[in-house]
Amino acid sequence: MKSILLIGMGKFGQAVGESLLSFGDEVMIADRNEEVINALAPKYANAVIAACTNVDVLRTFDVPSFDCCIVCVGDDFQSSLEITSLLKELGAKYVISRATTEIHKKFLLRNGADEVIYPDIDIAERLAMKISSAIIHDYFELSDDYAVFELEVPAQWKGSDVMSINPRQKYDMNLLLIRKPEGSVFPPTAKYVFELGDHMIVFGNTQNTLAFTKRNRNKK
Image (cartoon, rainbow, N blue to C red; front, side, top):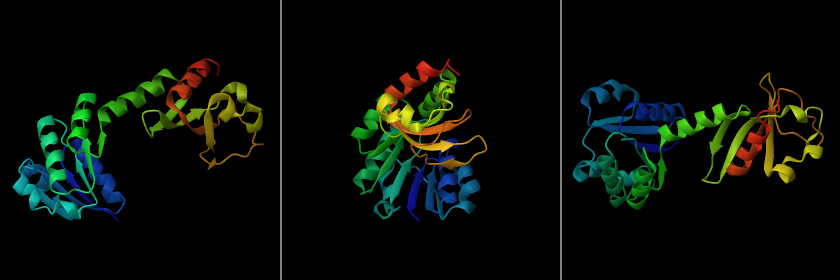
């Protein structure tokens, strides 16, 4: 169980909070909106109505005691920047801040954020990938250059085994798992024979994997 300070309880902040609670983490929430805090307070270990751009207010939170501080203020970049900077000044161990643009991300990183997320852009990119490539069913970005993808196995692979296809050598994709249509998931052996409807979970360079999906999207 981790202790989390969550600042900014808009829709995104509330979604993050619900997920953290489901994992059993101890979460303290803070927001300047009294109505929102009063509605959410029963769910959390501690809930505070506060303007977190005030360093004296943040100091009362005992910031260094939290494993992670998350700044979910998305509609006021100036406030997000100030809160991020103040948290680091007060000794925060790890700060994750929300951004809405790449420029916001750069400023947040320069001002103390250990990690920056921008969910609106992430969701848009994920949707665009799924729409533009019929064989991409999901993906998880690990860095700017690498990601884990769930791809539909191309139809022309049907009846061929993993060794003969050799995704790693031919396509620069590390085959991790196979997902069957009924939902079962397992790591394939070199002798596994691909079947129509199979999904493969692969790790690889993002650009190379996208190039692979573009080549195969019309070959189903």
